[in-house]
Length: 322
Image (cartoon, rainbow, N blue to C red; front, side):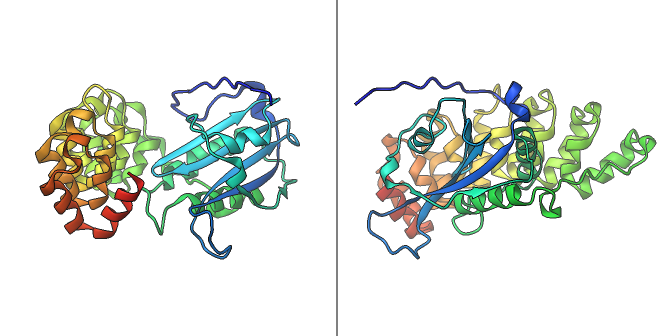
């Protein structure tokens, strides 16, 4: 058989990716791909991983969109990349067996949705409603269903992002007293404020004290402010990835983050994942964090027992995955 190489590029995104001439291409169909967790299982079982493959311009190119834990992976296959390869590779380059993939019926679309419109939906609605991974309430199957729902009816109210500041008079938008009250009431309004407020540590601190994930809307300068970031991760450990990279691995921040949500140990650097005190704090908060403990401590009796005591099921699953 032939050997074929595919060159991939990773992009650091601050908004919807610029796909150039492909931005105006039309989405013409989609298929859901399922991969059962076990080789032999009843078709009615919901134990499968799911993702969507989107057909652009009748198969001239493809988009793969897939939720893996807390990551949303998007792969754009340009002209010449076949559907087979979109099933065989994850966005980050990890291979999987296409023979184990179960392709659901192709659904043709005629709504005229462009690639750019789809990307703006990801950057708007999906980003604002994103929730940490949850086995029952926020998982890969629900992400695939949401993608498919949008493609079938992109204009539906449930897919629309509402700017809470849109109807506010400009004078009020410039009034700091009003802004402080607004972000306390609705922390994610920070996204729609003027740059001067998104780099104002007082405004951002109030927002992240109510919703740590609002840190994502702050300026780079404020996301490098230790006190502001500490307020964010103390409210929601999942804010840790939004901390500026220059202080993201500060032990005080990481410790506060895993104290609030142990699972965010997955975002911690190696030195923290073999920090006994920090690791114990993480697994005592969430037994699933054991999966990310460094090998030096993974089988330590105190760490293992602490994780198992917090969540026996999580420890069994993590041990099997390990």
